[in-house]
Length: 322
Ligand SMILES: C[S@@+](CC[C@H](N)C(=O)[O-])C[C@H]1O[C@@H](n2cnc3c(N)ncnc32)[C@H](O)[C@@H]1O
Image 1 (spheres, rainbow, N blue to C red):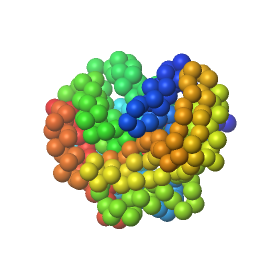
Image 2 (cartoon, protein in one colour):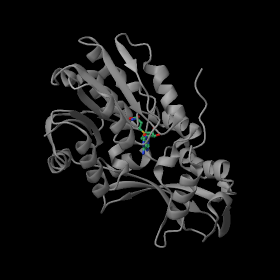
Image 3 (spheres, protein in one colour):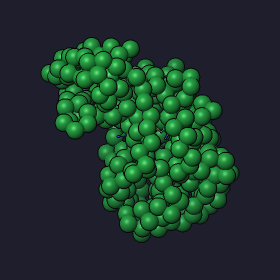
């Protein structure tokens, strides 16, 4: 049975983050990492199979086709860590390819307890693979993984699904630099990146006609109600996906449909929203294949291989720590 999702462990940290981001003067925000409670993680899994969301299928096709070659380019013994594994479905290709040559430890690092439980269930039965999950933020989890590794072990870190795109570009590079700082020379990072494509296709991927992405976005307000005692009326907000051409990113917002006041007791906050005002909840930056090579070079990696999907512009990038 799947472990039920628990509220975030540290309510005061959640409350402080919500307080800080919702009171920004120019544009109110909410941190995207809080989209993933039990409901949010389940809705994200549904988004991944929507016809309009080609990203996950592209990522999966590349892994299915090239997993053997990817692990074949890396020295053994190789252990695998994954940043924000989600349900881990796509990771099966990598683990099965590796299990043909060695016993493998797989370390999913996740802040969503329900996603971590789903991942352990999904990948728990592969011969020659042992799973040790870390319910921690990315870098904390990765530090814990490297601290426990043996001297002889090489590490392959997976960062799939273009989750890197949720960081602003500068923050994304800082993050890759921080990952590089934790790794040893020769360790590898397999980085999935969604590439620029027709704007209409990108918008549909984040605003599907069935309304699943809208529910995913609105659930963030529901989560704040459940865990921080707030009184957001979800029917007074509308999901919006926008293409920001200057920053080359999709932005998800929640638009207030009327002037309204919301109380968030655990954050000691009363928010007055104007009619039409938005709360910015997530960004998904898009890349050109060449951007990724330049970003890798600036953050202490060299690109060992780059594979592109033919149906949905997406790149799988195998980066080696220099
Ligand atoms: C966009 S989803 C991608 C999931 C999966 N990698 C995929 O490709 O389908 C991002 C995942 O990262 C997790 N996550 C978000 N922020 C995190 C953080 N700071 N530390 C650890 N996990 C995080 C979320 O819970 C979610 O499962």
